[in-house]
Image (tube, rainbow over all chains, first blue to last red; front, side):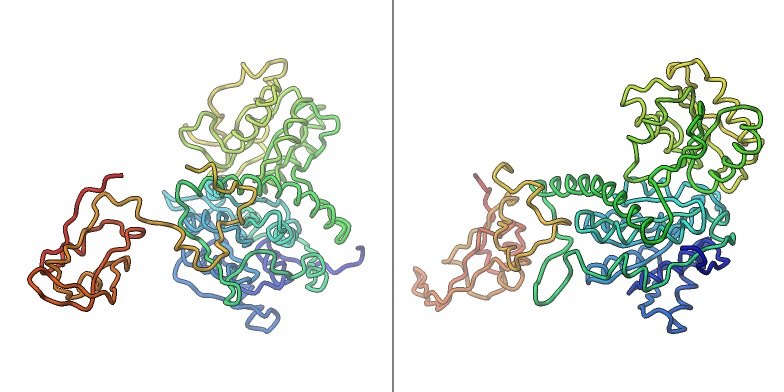
Length: 398
Length: 106
């Protein structure tokens, strides 16, 4: 694939280019910072005649996703995007989209939830969506953000899956930051994700009822189906990423391992902060002889529990960086909760500790990462019984 | 109650109902606690129950009826108990007080 043209694109623009390449039929969205420039760019593509799609201007995110549900039910390839309060307002319809098994793709530029009102980045909105039945991915480069949209349609529209997919990037840190991106052209994208309606749609010649009442005799069976669809989504993710690599030359895994071959310690992270951790590993930890690696979780739902547990089982201690809080939970941060149960349900004794950092756009500095690494190293020779029961709140003023 | 119904593996994804008109198979009467009963002697065939019933469960029949007092009607109103939910609107609206709500015993 050498010699292909690269463009300097922000994360949001990279996502818009991908939706254009996917030849989406309907874009239904409501502006919200820091997502806005995704749909702004798409509206520009449509206005310029570069993309033949219906742009639905709605009065709220609740309506944005409702219109997306309707369009998808009619057989359209649908795209939407949102952030923070927008995701919160969509919450009701997110469950409906996944339960109705509609392969909508939504880009999320993650942002802190109010109050106090805050337009900066953390994972509060992303984590709030974690039980809505959507497949969820988080990128950490703009190229990956671009590619994820193409991958998302591949997974969403697979007849064994038929689930909506969230492709997330960190607000500002990625959404408004420019990196070189090699855009996938429409022709090659559509070879990878041909436009074929694989789901039941509204059709006057074959009438169906969608979204009916599910009485106690029927409801549970459909939830059981969704559980299975999530399991299938994992299989399809693996097939899709393999085919993606063959086609486009870029390899994605549910979990990215960075300098893990000889690692004795690791930090688990998602999104842009993983970049800071990588830099810390190379510039600081390894120079000091600390065998530190990074486990970056790309696929959050379905959670790659097997792989994470496997790699953790060989380590002396692990720290999990959460950029959100699960208030009142038994663990602290949501990523920590999933990591803990993935490991401990399999009887792995490695001590795993939680760091909550970077809420509401608070920078996660080298100094912060050093604090986390030091606290992780301090668990060397310990077991899970010795792990602090409260997360470390990194960078907060006492 | 659910053993004879299809399992999750054989149901269409997303609870899509693929047979048009199959709603009639879902008998909605079983949440009824009171059952409306029309007294054909008192009924004046005004059709108000038919008009007000939110479920369309009042049936208008071309069935003659003669009261004990000798009054002849060409029509008779009956209730489709498969779908009547027992809301009591018919009884409330009946100007002749010809509909009684009696306790449902199953």
